[in-house]
Length: 565
Image 1 (cartoon, helix red, strand yellow):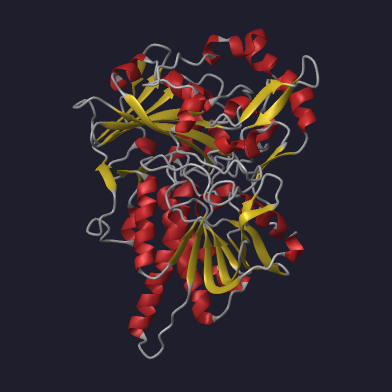
Image 2 (cartoon, helix red, strand yellow; image 1 turned 120 degrees about the horizontal axis):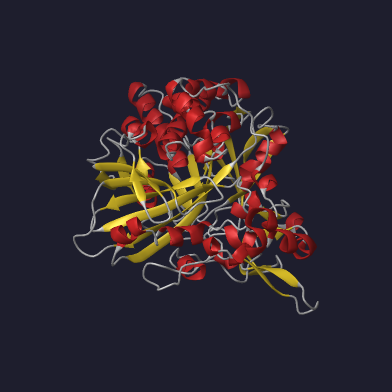
């Protein structure tokens, strides 16, 4: 069918893939440079065309983050953001760190430096990105929501644009009555800002070998809820981080952020290079709320929103090459997250801004070569992006040994700028390679172990996974192609289920994967994929022990609809 499709072509100066913090910052900074140029050169006015492609039905619908933001990049990009109505929920007013045992808590007597948030802002990233889109559009940027970039276009090894996805295909990939072919968008510069584990940028990296000599990518999975407390119970601006309970087989932590109007965000992040085949972050988030400390904080609360996403955790040594002929990459797609501080929004915004500056320089020069675009890398090197990520360049490699085992070396890294006993520590595995058999991790009890039991749902504070997914607002057309590509179902049935108890049934925060009875084979189970539940976290693409699932882009406009997270 592909050869018979007539596709509309559009020529632009810059196409930005992803309408999140990085992509929108790139667009805004580019337009600022255009305006400054035209003001200084009234006889040489330029009007380049910039397009931002966002796969969600609206900007912000797929945006999820930890929600405490360092405002440095926002200050640089839009100094008068307060006057322009930027949706800041609160300043950070109170801070604390606790270690949680099964039924006790111990408060850190001194606030560790990574958790010092004085001067930072509590935000909803979905609200923030909608506001950034408004600023960009007011400057003349074309923001196209509901358009996914599914293929990069090349002239040899030079990126010359992207193709957007077809819409209106049925389950078998045949055109329906509402079929709309994707567009060809050709550009001088393509900026990839399409987030964690982007299937598009993953293929670009493979073709252009952008990860040569780099540590493998590793990831965390975060899940969080917004909880409405009774009137007068909330503490606006409160930021609390905890370690310990409920995690026992993996490395991670939890957080509480106080919002206005007696709302709180409660979340949990865990590294995906755990050995635990039964890792279930949604279940662990529910267990967290059974702790006496959380029971007291959340008494009378009602969960009103839920979401989940992965974030890159490898740091500086896992970052790809940031430029090539005709392209740049920024934000989460470039592994720019400070996992020690659980912060990436300001790094996404700053790297996006610097990508926008570099794209402007290329457009003015009419030169989209790797040689010119290499200046982006130097801009990153001279910015706080390098400064902050360099401080945490060995953090994941160390902390993955366990919080207590790694504590002395982490302390030395804090003292000596990211270096301890040695530097440039390798990551010697990919996340899917670390999973061990259930018997090795949990013994004969397996899923029956008390730590693997979901608290009884009450549909107020505690929920089963499917009920939580309902609160994400996720929608996909049921008569559309399944975007979750299973390579070999016999592996799930014959090897993965008996040995690992089907990890995808547990780690997926959206109940997408289920082992059900196989009516064609007695005493056998088969994998059922409920792809319309998918909230686009891409964990399955990362953590399947056999690397057996390929997360591809679904029809644009589908997925979660985050509003307040």
